[in-house]
Image 1: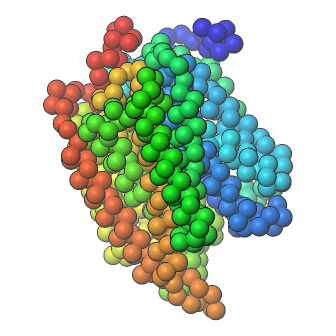
Image 2: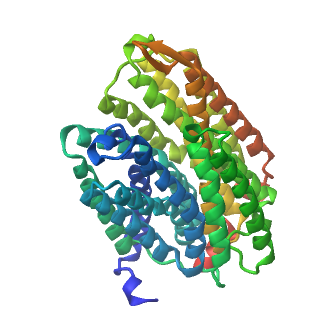
Length: 487
């Protein structure tokens, strides 16, 4: 092992106790970094002297970089060491935050936010480390917690950012996230042990470039379609280019000996269907976050809006984060008793029920909070089950790359959800005080759309082949774990 990347010695029992909280902290930081910029978006054109279109790239750049780097860094982790690549991802995330704190130049800010996109690989890398390092009876609950950190961090990041932005200079927010990132990096360096499980071979550079080109074309078209026009030449060209490039990429992956993504494994029912379920679950989950924030901030004059401040809106998201933290061990127990495919199906049904509550009443704050809480419960069950399904279906040496693809599918689902919700709200408006604002019917249609997609995710989950020999065992306890660890 390279001495420069070797962890500081930690007593084995202490390391085992610290591995899960340290990795979970990294996952929370990743979600916080993605959401802290949201309260700033309305003021950034004034603060940076840039156009609103340019400012929107602070979100788009992170999305695109995360989508590309998640499967790439996952594969690199399987080949060169998961701890090593995890530290690189955390360092890029922290460096991006420092750059944001040092500048007001929109070009540098966009580049820095792209660096922070590397943090999207933290969760799949951490899940793979947990599989390799923890004893089988602890893996299920740890993986469930790791999956839930996405929602926990998002719920914490919004009110944290809103409070700092309201009472301090906006650069202070990025200095705060830089300090948190440095702490997370130091803790991971100190406590996380390098996994001995590796997948040797030559890195697929051609596959990486092809995947990057295809995903950027696809997600750029999805994220900018509403602004540029879905029938515009730019958007049509992006989608056509994405189809062509990804088709060539798939052909290359099937012909190369050491592909970036093992498509033969990925299209099998045991792996492919969880990837499809991740796409639909990501769509259903993200609609709740998007719509809730807009709805509670809408003017009271609309007849449904509550006119809440950004800080109050952020606080409304906190219960969802707490619920995801509390329900992650419940998800692990359900998966241990009934199997992760059942947990995933239950999660989809609960998601749909949450949106049914939102459709029934979206004018009273307590009902909004209850509906959002139910959606968060369903999200926790589904997100916690997805990596467990992947862990049970792939070899130990491919867990980081396989989970990276699963997270990528969730990211694509979220991007499509953002575009679909925006399209629905734009086409269902009402005039209030001389301005066009989304109508309540538009919000309800967005809820109905997300609930329907959640039920589709349920159907996909039930189609995943059942492995009865493992469904009765502890979640995430495949034979390869014990073999790799020599247990």
